[in-house]
Amino acid sequence: MDKNIAVIGTTNESRRTFLKTAVTALALLPLARLPGPAPAQAAAGQNPMKIGVIGSGRIGGTLGTLWVKAGHEVLFSSRHPEELEELVKDLGPRARTGMPREAAVFGEIVLVSVPYHAVPQIGRDFARELAGKVVLETGNPYPSRDGEMAVKVRAKGTGLASAEFLPGVRLVRAFNTIPHTALRTEAHRTGERVGIPLASDDQEAFAMASRLVKDAGFEPVVVGPLSRAKDFDVGTSVYAQALTARELRQKLRLD
Image (cartoon, rainbow, N blue to C red; front, top):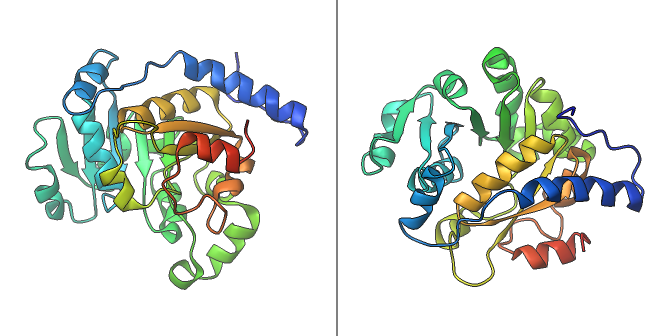
């Protein structure tokens, strides 16, 4: 079966077919439910992944830390990796630091979490290293920071724009709506978990990203193809909120 899912049109029937296929894949993924050290044991039993983090700031650094604690190997990267030593010093042997190119090579999955204007450069510089890999991209375009390109990206939709900037990867838009503070305080919480909306055109990428969402202590919410990532872009009703998965589905009309 072709790994890429072609979505034709925007009818309710095509959306339901797309979501049914993706949800079937997600059903095969076990949910890490226990706080503390238990998620690390669960991930270890599921074949830990190697994750490269390009951009180890408030989002990338926090997610990478959660994934290390869940049992995965993570290479945190920066143009100044020596500045990340404080981040990794207490995380043990599964965490290391390096340059962005090293992270692109190291990761079977790569998280790109940088100011949005840097995404095109990453696509150009690391095209060979990222080719064919699942890439989770978290950036949000702000004209005040990213310039005129942010205006064009918002008009097109960030999912489609990121796919153009990162050609050849298996892209997932993820972790762009949740405030960075909530990543720290709401991971593995009891009761209903905070939901993370996901958009991708690739079924396997959905499955791998969803596992990492669960291992980080949240609940994946499959929205649809990259064209629907616009539904949770900057300025939408779900942006910059720590909503439960149920609340996300209601607001995004997925139920």
